[in-house]
Length: 346
Image (cartoon, rainbow, N blue to C red; front, side):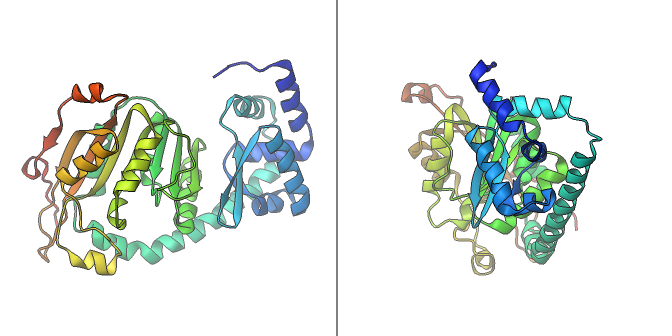
């Protein structure tokens, strides 16, 4: 990426930002995502006026818009022009400016409203989620294994398909230059967005979208994660194919899901379409998608009082540029249930 701007481009950027309302909008969007309704409340201006300013900023390449159902969200772009604007706002603007301070106060009030709504949704569903979590190893153990498989390398772009609450984004955000979470459920996205705001992860984006048709370019991601997603699908293969499409050569796919089991309750009560997966089946799907299975781990829990338990599996795939490279891939590192068993204390 070019680290400088032409005279023409810089003048265009400064002209677009050189108006009080537009500068206020850029200051707000440099710290997170807001929709048009949010911005009208914060700025105290009409929707047509705010929309006109946003249109000018988008035309100048300073902000990007994306649809989430009937809502349209905006954020400062992550390219060089966006970095220039973020730098100006961070270094040149007076943080104690009365107008900007009032905007920040109103923005925090809107975030607090989001947080309250998201927490209510979480409370309404927490009991059901806890019933499933009680059947497998603690999430902290799974998270630790995820970090081991992903490794400490810096990621330019991480994509989390079926992001849900945004847990995966929180785990890997520190090592990612940018990250995108995709989910169809607007309530889950609202919860995840609140979580990212609370953590100050402004480099993380959340998008409503179909994980079979992700609105991102081919070979654009260093890592893609499918965390507890595939068991909700009738046919997981197309989702794995789409994840592979997003990966650059050498990129990594991390899949976290359950080993094959016979707990029919999960199908009937929690809408699980698949009762887990075998490593053989997962390896075949990865191979068909042009990936090589490079890591295969099982985290088995002791049986609960009911006698029921779930084994969490982590599969790591690597995308290679050519079949010849795939043949020289490192062998699968597989850990058995016995090696990885973690006892759950009642």
